[in-house]
Image (cartoon, rainbow, N blue to C red; front, side, top):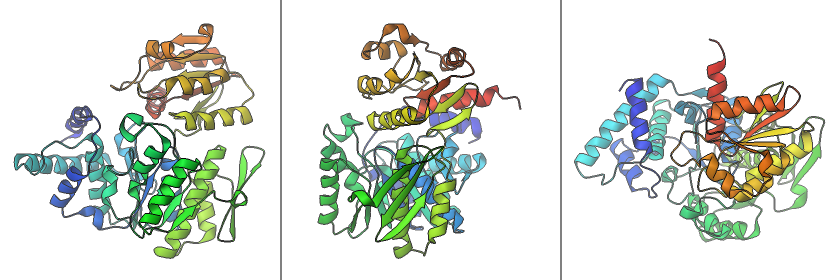
Length: 433
């Protein structure tokens, strides 16, 4: 397939929606001689922070000279963002070549009835990542779990370390209503005897994960079990964090902003320590350097000045709380919020957290079948109608926000990484070549 044919193929399979189960992925990978077994890996699940943790770990290993594969989701602008080695995205030509191989193999498997249903968009990309990492002979792959864990396509690997970052109420239609049920699904990545790094602090969810680890004989590391293990100090432009593990202290100031990124970094440090024991030796200085030099787009990302534009996914309550804390700590100018969301999110609760921070809220949408139209968003939020504007076109909504903020104000774009990606496309397309 050429580039346009690949794009049309991906658009077609994106409508297949969400489907849980590992049978399809295992059958496809078996047909390719199990490429996911040719390299060691780390699985990272959780409600928030898993992409950032994967990015930290990739940078740490890259600084040690290792070829570190990275598979994440969703992408912001280009689908190739999901598959990288170090900081380098898979080449578009390589992506199309592997996708063509994958499509042809899937058609054969369906024809021979070895596959009863076509694989989903996420399953396609997960398998493509495994093919690429094998072809490129990566030393280690960091795999961000898409949704849940137990039945996620990434969960076909046997990881060196399993990581669970946080647990919050999301995807309850698929994962269960309570935090314990959600934690149970995410703890499905835990394997017998494989160490578990857990950043979860909510008691019921934490207990569910720890119990699962104990049943499987998996060494368990609760990162925030003791208060003095993690210390935050405010600095001029952010925070300085100190994390202690087994008596050794790591002090760091991440380039990624916010207290939550300090916690994500602590999780990454713990996973690095365990990798250093179970895989290859990793140096403390390079671990800290990796934490302090990691860049990860769309997470409290500043992209322009006058007005300052801040992009952050903030797609659930936990993410919204983190964004709120950052704005209250470091933002003194008036805020214009551009907000869009998926239909299945806790829109009213997220609005209660974010909307009071803004003088004006512009509701918009992004081009995705699960996106909630701005008029429906407006019906779900309890907010002063005078400060709510609806603009379905994301480009016009963003330009309106810039004008309303003025050169001294701040535009915050939040509610979904899909919206963040749409705004990044708008900005990229407006810059002359």
